[in-house]
Image 1: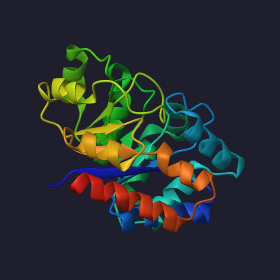
Image 2: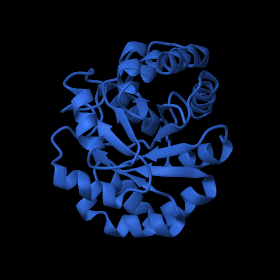
Image 3: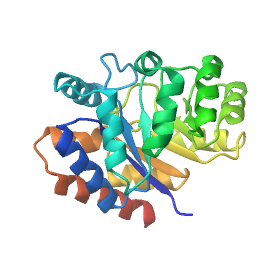
Length: 242
């Protein structure tokens, strides 16, 4: 199996219809899976680009129901929801994960839910057979990596930097991946700070997957079209596969 390319798109951004166009563009450009961000008013793990897109989507009235509608409409690639815990909890854990199952959502990332406090969510996710994906930062201890390994049923999301999304790739990513690799047999996908094809190629040399969000959404913020997004994703695909 080749290295996974996982772009990130914010649900409802830049509009509900154009968001579907972006999902299709990512698929056409060579994405293997796509993260669909669930807009939230306090996205603490996200940098200014994704915060702005989330705010714009909320201002336009985007709801969880709209995200599920997108998932039900778009079946060209598996979707992974990335959303914060408060809206999911308010929606109802069992209801949320069962709806994910019906909509064909292949996983859920909840960045502000610590694995140590995730038992209730994991139980609901397991009942619906929707795996939860946990984040692992460079500061994560070996003991916590082992815990994340035990709780995971899909890939582990490695946060490449000590910061928020879009902050730029820096630090010893290769060393971080090697350390986690010694502690788990799960696939390791790296996100946060990957902005260029060169970044993607460097990460793909050591990891199993590459996650790109802010750099893609910047294209849309600057007036780019779905075709521009497709071209960007294709450039990442080529760099990863080269």
